[in-house]
Amino acid sequence: MLAGRVRGRVNPLVTDAALAGALAIVTVVYARQGYEARYQREGWPPFGFAAVALSLAVNLPLAARRRTPWLAFTVSCGAFVAYTAAGFQPSVNLWGPLLACYTVIARQPVRRAAWAAAVTAAAWVGSGLAAHLSLELSVAQAAIGVGIVWVFATGSRHLAQRNAQLAELTAQLEREQELRARHAVAEERLRIARELHDVVAHHLSALAVQAGLAEFVFTSDPAAARQAVVSIGTSSRQALEEMRGLLGVLRTGPDVGDTDRLYRPAPGLTHLDEPVERARSAGCEVTVLVSGQQRPLPSGVDLCAYRIIQEALTNTVKHAGQGARATVSLEFASDRLRGRVSDEGGKAPAALPSSGLGLLGMRERAKLCGGSLRAGPRAEGGFEVVFTLPLAPLDTTGGS
Image 1: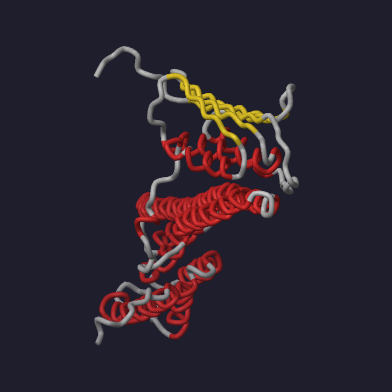
Image 2: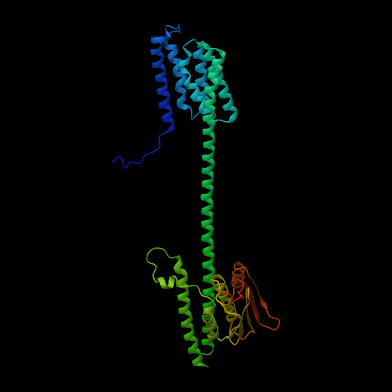
């Protein structure tokens, strides 16, 4: 039962109040017993009501030493000076002002701390002289007592400052981690949005062109119309498959469905025949030319090149349309991949609308991979997209 309770931290104000009350009681009891045993024979005045009241005034303010350290010190030290000036046995109330001085040094600015130390030392010297000690011994006693308090209090101050700095740094690190996490989430959302744009734009453009072709030749060439309808079904199924795989990363929980689809590798140049065949089924004649030493590419570069070519073919299908001829050229150099997608234009049944985001997305992809891309009309007619992506230098030394 007790082990299951939550142990809260004790309130410092309660601790200070208990300490002040205990110190006041011990002081009064000790002083009265000391008077009966020894102080009376030494000629000190009786420890009566006035002495008890002043002793309480010296010790009880310690209950507020953390909340109002300077006020607690002022009251305690002032009562101690009044107690000493009244002629009562001075060594009884030495410790209350010293503890109040410690609190001021540990918690107040340096100027106030120095004033508190000087006042406490002076009060201790006066108390020593009132106790019939020599000046040298009184000064030494005050210097040692206040000096020890100063060392410990300044150490406590520095520790508190370091703890505050560490707490601030910890909070700052937590904020930075949260910002980095948010930035990572934003980047991931941007990546998913870019992938969705490429998938949806490519497939829907192909579907629109194929549907237009089927309608255009529905009566004149039923076989071509039937083939266009078959291509529509194939393209739509491929689009759904890609979108399911892409959106699967957004799902959470144990029931994620087809894990093979969820963790399927991203497409690359080895899958280039898929967008090429879709463009061909939409009535665009596509030629693929590859030169140089073809080799596996880093996943990011591979996906970037695939998406750029896919988007360029999509634009060709959308804007050049039926009868267009496109050429996809890939050149594998030793330290870079150069690609070109160009078309000669064609006769489209109807131009499809464009948001212009495709070209922006292609440029951003190339830039993220450290490459470059330019796109625009050709002088001899048509349109072209040219991109360059850096690669690790090809090892030509023949070493294993």
